[in-house]
Image (tube, rainbow, N blue to C red; front, side, top):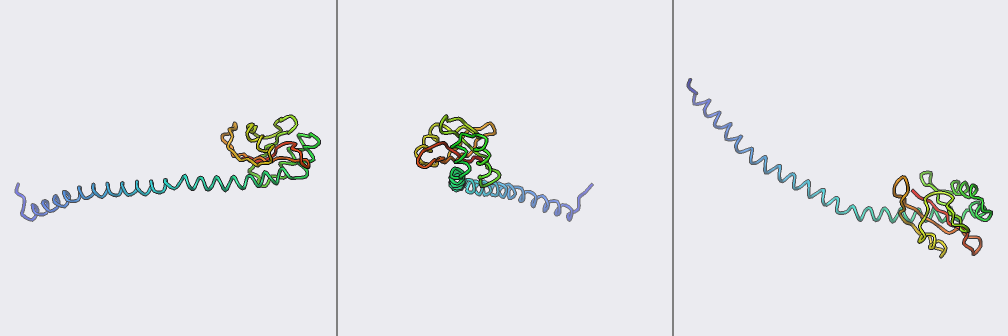
Length: 164
């Protein structure tokens, strides 16, 4: 069996093209992989700044919600009368967003009426008139918690706030 010149040239040309394309394809694959990896690294490098900005904005919003909730006349009245159910109900009605849950801590006994128990540092900050925002561990996972002091004229009678 003999191969014609035309067929031999066609096979040679096809083999040459194939041999030339394989290294080119490998180089292209490596460059494309490197470029995609670089783009992903660049995108991920700004993630901490974006997350920090988002958390700061959300902390400010939670702090404002906690302040409004703690200043609610119904919440203050319930704290004055030491009525835990009324305080929790008033706090839930005063919350700004449905997805937020309430944190209510009695000032007289430091008894938790609702939500995750804030640490001593957060409660001390509310006693000093501050509105701390922190992450706390809850059974459902970490929660972003904001507290505000509940005041009866100039006296601290507890802390109320929100978490999500």
